Length: 515
Image (tube, one colour):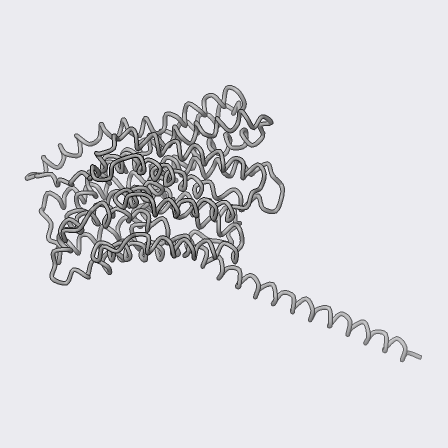
């Protein structure tokens, strides 16, 4: 096995084993699971591990260089009127085939799937143009975020409540494993040609802006539809009896994701081919590396999405139902927090973010620090989401104060932390959240007789919100630590100057005292 691929697979193993262990413990104790469903889950876990390994290596070899190269070419373009439509098309086409968005669209049958998908794609494309303008002119990210979120929450009070959670969830699911590596690298490319002090901070924030567009777009769509017709597709757990049935069930799932991932990667490949012919003109060796990397990414995503959707989603729904039926159903909150802590480490796009943060900050923000902080945020998010499932509290009671705190912190921390924090919100809410956690919440809500659309939907939005506060809190800690270190260095320098002055004075006295 390729040495780098082996390293990636081992990294994925350490990430997936904890959540697998938690589900196994629950299945042997408070949430007994049929053997066939357990087999689905275990096979899904294996596919998840291998898939994340292949995908991570493929991203390093292909998607990051492609996104960075296209971003540099767009930033270097002199005709903004031509660059803006190109950014819109890139954002829209990559979003259309994002697998997480397909999952969400299928849950709202009152609105045709393609209507939701095109609406969300248009929102992402529009905000990709805004990201281009921000990179070009150095606009302050926190001021843009404040302005747009004011519009979001004003609309939130006008949109039917059945559409509200779906709208906020759409902002999280669009930033999945296909879009995140590409648009993050593209953001870095857009700002690479700028030499000012804020260029590093501005290389982040594209994911943050891309997450707002879908929320606004779906809210506007919600104002146009009759909310009384809105419903969700009830989840059905497959009835399997033998291991052969399990194998056939997975085999039947592969063709769907083979096609989905091909459609998702096709726009990136097409745009790259055009840019290679027109502007990039990479050498043959670089092209071969990128092609091999795309093959790795393709295989990895097919394995990952098949494992998550076929194996993890039924397990998540079943465990949610079983735990919610316990006499002490409040245990949903600590179990949800435990699952949230570990599940974020298995998100493939989180690895991309953590690696890029460490590289751009020169190691000042380590991957370990980012991972721990995101786990804390994820645990809090899922705990609050389970509280909503139990009590039926409106999601606005959590999102309004949460975003208010996050936007307030943006004036207290270094700009780079604000950009990283708002990017991490979209990255953390990936396919593991859209499948396992959403299915877990839906199962629990079904068992408790709640309204799935208002109480269970919204878990993705909660996951996208809490990292904004957690990462910026990390920024405050980092800022104070840096100030203390700078103060210590200044004291040492001052002491050194005093010693030099003392030595000079002593030398002068000795010279004067010589006969």
